[in-house]
Image (cartoon, rainbow, N blue to C red; front, side):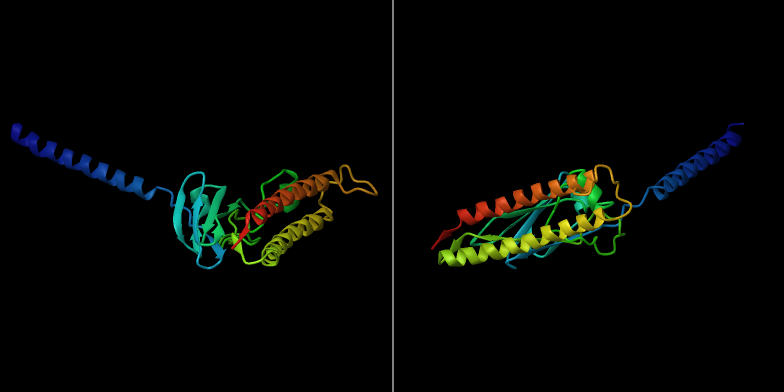
Length: 222
């Protein structure tokens, strides 16, 4: 009786072990795959700058530019700060792209990254929230003459103004769409959704250029 019981018990134990092993393998196979990275390229001027990226969930320590980050893994918004000798540490904040449509996003007061590209990350779908690139133009600290300072900061201002103008033109084009709600529209005024978008855009533009002006005033002469 005992001899007959032992092989049966052993066989049952082996069967349970194999079943547990198989179950473990199945559990491993069923784990969802991690999403493919969607990378934003960080470029800086001057080219010898070093940049770090700090998101709400993680960070990338300082590295020479250019470098790439996955802002979804770092956590939006991501503060990208670049440094180089002779320049102020300069920060651009990377926000999600204005989706699903620029006018609705602006009217809802979505934050704006003027120096981020309109296009999505390379290889990402069109509806990706991740911008292809963000550019950090550092602000110089020292100049030989007042004229040199003005020329440098005027060029930076023009660069940023072009980005804000592009956003305004996109919003105006969207406002003309037949799909845009016409509530509040009149012969002399665009729809309410457009007015809200334009007001938010101007508020953000003014704050952005004000920060640039502060750095211009901080810059000194050798």
